[in-house]
Length: 124
Image 1 (cartoon, rainbow, N blue to C red):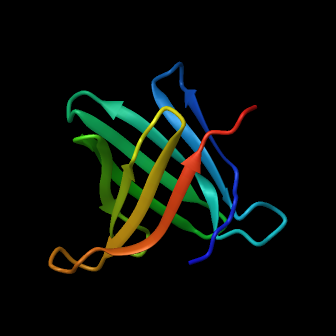
Image 2: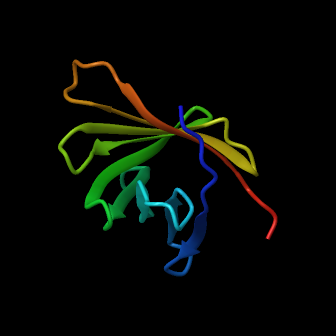
């Protein structure tokens, strides 16, 4: 498993109505495998979040719906290749989380872990 230390930034946007993050992995000037932004907007009508991911460098995008499941956050949708995608945020604290990205071809297939991130807040 490869490890990298990469910056990502989270901010409230649109007058606090959404959360945007920016991911650059690995840190520049190395060629990026993840270079994009996510916009998360809460929808009280579904009691969940609409999540839009866009990575223009790798021409990757997805739309997911995210909800709390116990102490975790689980996002489900499809990626730009048409695969089922599941992003799980676990071990959430005020300063850290564990993010597990998984995919599968169809409903009957097992989930395959495609990447993991162990994130930790740094001091400004």
